[in-house]
Length: 111
Length: 115
Image 1 (cartoon, rainbow over the protein chains, first blue to last red):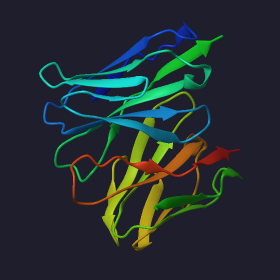
Image 2 (image 1 turned 90 degrees about the vertical axis):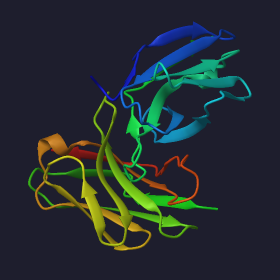
Image 3 (image 1 turned 180 degrees about the horizontal axis):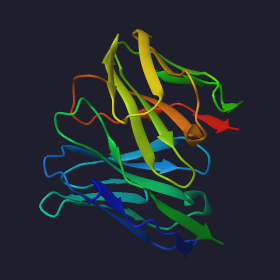
């Protein structure tokens, strides 16, 4: 089983749609979680951290369920510029700051 | 503010040639440093990470090596490149200590093609 699993997509949605990405992780001792965004042929960029109580940043909402070892990202009112690959990232405990990256979920927002 | 520089941006090398990719971080001290590789259409694979000068941890057996000669400098090297070394190489840094929520921040990457 992969340490971090995501649906690779692609998710093809119209502008204005709401889209949700899911991610599961295998290490129950994982202690911090992030969503990154990667545009084609570019470096990954931090989108948001994921906190236990859930957190929101504009149109983006991240949720964490430690019991189910599940992380989600919700994007409301999708924009064309949201088209990218979204990477679920987990920081396992006691591994020197290492991050484990999921394979990514590709999103394509169409006009 | 902190910045990370990685070069070159693109590189075309013949099989069997040596490699040296350099990464430097500015605006912070004693960062954790990382080298990743991303093959076409694949996820990020952690190659090496370093928590301090001269301290290198290798994640995947391969013909690559890393060195950290200075606090904010991280170098990825190979004596003889293989075709399978082609990919997108990314350097990243993160803060040490403090909050457990320590995201990593990436350089622009080096696109390496082996011919």
